[in-house]
Length: 422
Image 1 (cartoon, helix red, strand yellow):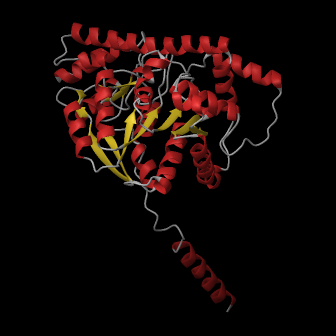
Image 2 (spheres, helix red, strand yellow):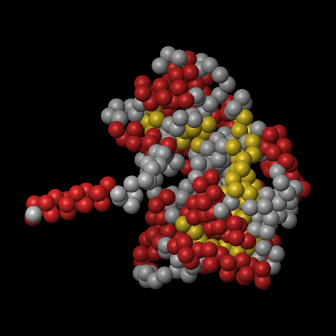
Image 3 (cartoon, one colour):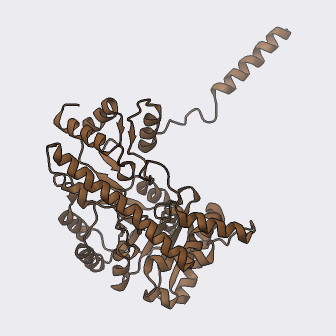
């Protein structure tokens, strides 16, 4: 009898195990970027190159901590800050200085005190706050138009925020350039009042930006169609080396009377990847409206994460508020941008010297961390399997992964892959 009872208990336990609460949860698809990194790490070949990760590397292929960041951290340590909670919208001084960096010190909304701004958990958090706020309070179409292609996380961020996600044309595969006519046509055909997501500079993943004249035309169309512009500015200063030049689109739209939403990240331009420092802002009509928007931003943020972390905001604010550190930082971000530009020039020249089939001018004309090379999926697969060169299947590479020690090997591999000789 005891044996039978034990058997029944064992059977019951087995049945419970087989009916796990999570038994019906399907496996999610692997992240394409992380997959590249995992394959790279498993490769034992000393020549291997990882061009998948969107993080800056110095001329030796190593992570780079800016000198201005180190000095700001030293100043923070010497001040012995407490570990109290920040307000819901973050460190007030950082939020103010982040807005000043983006909009410019002569910005009319900034001077009038009509920009609602909150610290965020990097650019991703800024986008999510913005998406949630618009889903609740934007009075027109709850549809956001993304460029095709766009950063892979844009779609889930806005979809999970409660917005309908659609696309507008952006990339022309035949020229490996901007499909400006398609872009204009799609924005003109968009339902009036739609939200449009615009990469302020260094478009991810293509590295293709509109010219200033093209930005002016986009502004006119957005105004004509009464679209709402939401800028994602993750690379201010990192694209061209000039924080003002990289902010042209945002500042022009505001100068033309647009009300805008803006997501900022300090991951790339200050190298604060793991500190998760960002800001979200909205331009409003006056300080009273700003106060109401601020109150609703707090209501969005409070159940998400209560309030943001302190350390990274102290670093960023230390740089933005100190003229000496700010000047040093501007020099450093310019240096990072110039190294990437130099790698573009070197890659273009080397591919041509190797008589690589095709036209490679897009390597030089693209800007920022990423480049759409125009390589096909079979070519990227061959490069990984035979040359130990890793990138995403669509041919996007992080230019920051190239340096004097590996760029010729990379160019030789690309040339061989295009020629079919790899």
